[in-house]
Length: 147
Image (cartoon, rainbow, N blue to C red):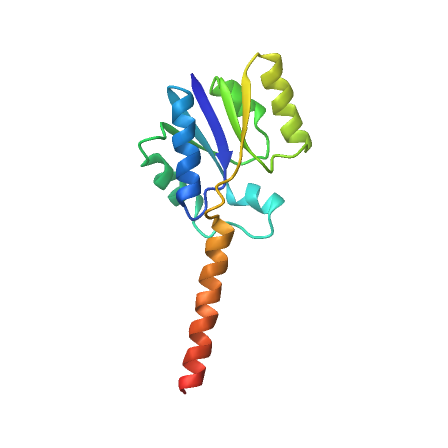
């Protein structure tokens, strides 16, 4: 069974690990689609902090990941066809955009599964970024007060 999930995977954290380890329990091969900077920028205001090649390399180093496939267009049907996906794991913010509906229809027509998962409440890449910015500003204020 080929299990496929997609995402940005910027600032790899325990929520990502929990998702990928869960994927491994569902099938023999875990394939991770990693969004390019241009894809991320098409639906988020900022591009990832970590470059695509480094995000891919870190994911490939995980024992629960068998294959990493970057994607450069916000379209999932072709990857699901090419990778012979049996189970597609999606996040709770999936939504009903045309590219999402297209892959849902394709997988349903082929008798494949889509499983929606909840995000790990412990952390997120956005939360990590906000914490770093807050620490940076805190250090600036302390430094100014000392001067």
